[in-house]
Length: 610
Ligand code: G6P
Image (cartoon, rainbow, N blue to C red; front, side, top):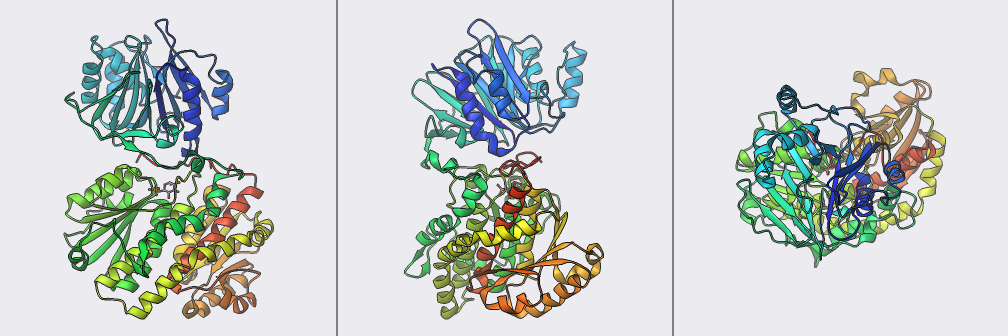
């Protein structure tokens, strides 16, 4: 989604803004722009549809746009097509204000109509422009009071960066339901929608909360509440290395992140296993509260939802308690049934997905306890949840998630074991066997990654298919959902995942000569059932690529066209191994089709609008 960066200091702003925008590229965007105060009474704006390189060329890497204070933005179109004029920053008609915005101004139509009736002429079709025009319309010489007045008139979700020609030594930052972070420097200060844009310049950050307004100057940063009363904010230190957000010799972030999975899994799991026991020191739920849980609802979007789908099978088996999985965008509008004995587990890599955040707030309002599984420290979901367990995956840059998925799953295993033990639902032999295998997962992941050429070879055979089905039963079906999503996200091949038993109820009519079916069959007890489905699709002309375990490989090879096999492990942990060939397959297929793997069309890393 859109990215914001702002700088005030003594250096030239444009190159810093462009560098910040480059680090936000991964979020997904279709146009970009910068606004800089020119030191002579004017704000100059350069913006352009397309990649950041276009903007870079237009501004000669920023050198053609001198000035020491400014704003930058990468836009992911919502209101108004991607175009030069709809790109941010937006200016008010007399050039007094430049505004960058993430989110949606819901009442922009009525505000636009009002302003047009007052003689204001709009340049773009965006909702954002009303903010710039309204600021100019309301301006009375007092910048903060004007911002406050405008905030009373606008509805929706927004992170705003504001530059005013009449007070060119300050930037104003505003946050409501869309993340905004302040970066604190010596003689300079920054604002950004994402820590990755700041980390090269400072590690000291302040996370803004909803309805706060910040004033940034060279000398410092002040934060105010909605009534313009000063708020004391504790700066936080970001401790990850800048190299973690760089490609480090890999062609794509996605590939780098696939390869990082053994380490990410280790970092997430190993410190939480002490003397072969799961120890969740960072979990603030008491043993009594855990025992009191009678129902679990997992809430998430996208791949995080797919982790929830896998976890349902695992938690129900371990805990013998009902576990529901809800899409966050559905949960919040479904009059959900939760009580004080419900535990809502919210899963989010970014911790900022707007639907997940809204669903979490709804669950809390209804009295449920909320445990968040989040990757980004200090993100809104992490801060608002009752309890948090972090996935220590490090920054994930590629839009298509891989290592975040794996670490979310890892945390779910830990939660499952920990709860099962407290609830008295697991015998010590089973517990010990799972913990023992958990510690072996990273090296088994490594062995799959060492043989990646095998999967590359299959991708080279099948990359030209137009339609691919993933079929499986139970957990295999849940893994198929993720395999299918990975593939369609980055290769643009039409793909669907089906519970294999459902094929006969409609989908098999789409199977014809040359359709590719990826059949997942990792579980012995369902193997034969799944193989019957394989025979059904083969007899209708499908090519079948199988995914199974070493133990079942030979049996599968007899029926399918090609087989991928992962090492054997405890059945509960198989998803962590199965997902890797699925990720690699999607990656290599997309590579062979020449797709822009790290920045797939129309997609965003962090979805901060509904
Ligand atoms: C976007 C990303 C997905 C991600 C989903 C949920 O669609 O492209 O990779 O799974 O959002 O994001 P979250 O940050 O809440 O896990």
